Image (cartoon, rainbow, N blue to C red):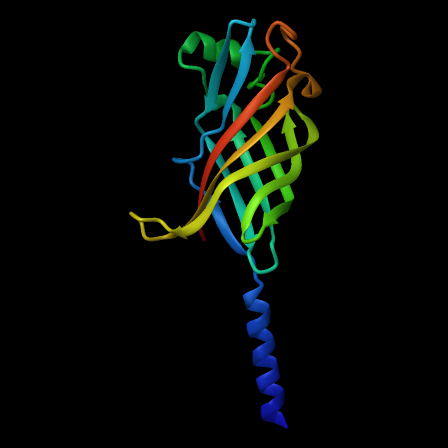
Length: 188
């Protein structure tokens, strides 16, 4: 009887570990949030942030997970210093007062064995609003060069910057901002 109890306990522990979430750390050298906005009706301008950090939790068997992504707004890169300063100032990203923006999600949406979306909370300029992002090209496997397990995808979403208090030059500079984030994360 004692052996049966030990066998049941062992089987139970295997079952629990099969559904344990794997933890991943964002690779900051391959995760660069990019945004695009219509500029005065003449062109679509692009900017990016060069410093990103965060963690992802994935339980593929249970089809659950979470995302905690932090973007360093002081790392804004518009392509030249004068424009970086302009976009860092009060009225836009106000990086002196708000040096980060975040996306946090506890609801990943799966289709078959792939993450296809995430519902969460996006914080910009101290204002937090719900945001659903699409996830394209989700893939996990061993990195071909480092041989370490990793996952990656391309994330996309749209915000209205005025919802977060960034109203400078609206509507001449579009209120709608497209966000694209290539993400790669190594398993811990």
